[in-house]
Amino acid sequence: MAETRKVIITCAVTGAIHTPTMSPYLPITPDQIATSAVEAAEAGAAILHLHARDPQTGCPTPIAEVFLEFLPQIKQRTDAIINITTGGGHNMTVEQRLAAPLRLQPEMCSCNMGSMNFGLFPAIEKFSDWQHPWEPQYLERTRDFIFKNTFADIETILEKLGRGCGTRFEFECYDIGHLYNLAYFVDRGLAKPPFFVQSIFGILGGIGCDIENLLHMRRIADKLFGRDYVWSILAAGKHQTNFVTTGAIMGGNVRVGLEDNLYLGKGELAKSNADQVRKIRGILAELSLEIATPTEVRQILALKGVSQVAF
Image (cartoon, rainbow, N blue to C red; front, top):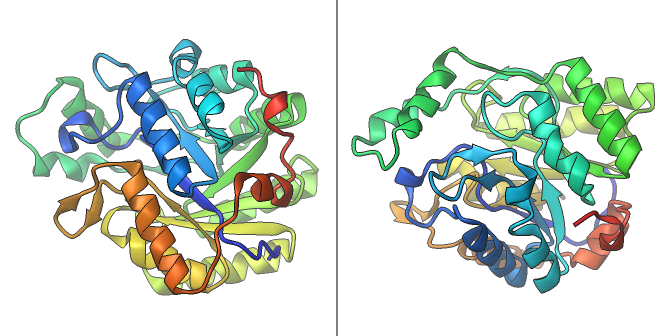
């Protein structure tokens, strides 16, 4: 695994998993997303992973114009690396998911490394009074849904966005097979080191939150990529803190944020993304680990630089 020496903190600010009913603190409007992202950067996040939402309903949206309502604000107010989703939201086509990234040409984008069941429907049982009609319908659809990321889809993303725009990727790996999918594209020459590999645990349909799985993910990534990758860890919900802490101890980097977990502690909703960043930064400090600055991360990940984006 590539030596980063300092820990990279990624913050996933809003995502496409949680709905407005689940937390009053989930950023929805462009101003809320911008403010929350900047606060997270000020708290220590070097990378900001960003989705867009319809400001009226909170539903995930792929529309580039909505991204443009908050990306310039974030760029002007912080030097954090802006990482735009290519996962979008459920039921978006790959063309829809790529529309904003191809127009905006960010330094980084996420790239989901395989099709998978992506079950959000169990959350329906926890709520009864929904703010918007779309929310329970959106969650229920995932009972009979495959989040599509075929080899052709991934190739399109790597060709058009990677080769075409100079964007580098947060390779999101929800299971062991996704590491092998990445290795295939490395062999094809479509993915170039250093690879930023995000190991994701706890999504229904992906690999589970067992420490044995964390160790196995690390072993297989080491086997496939040697010293050519930078490893990061995220875990859904209540598993977030213990998994990212364990990963940091093992030499990895960490991702937190309201996309992955709405809580700060047991039964306590996080009031901001910055709260989660400050929490993990405090834990890293207790472990005598330093955090990486955006400038350092740009060098570690060989990013093209903020002057080369199109927003």
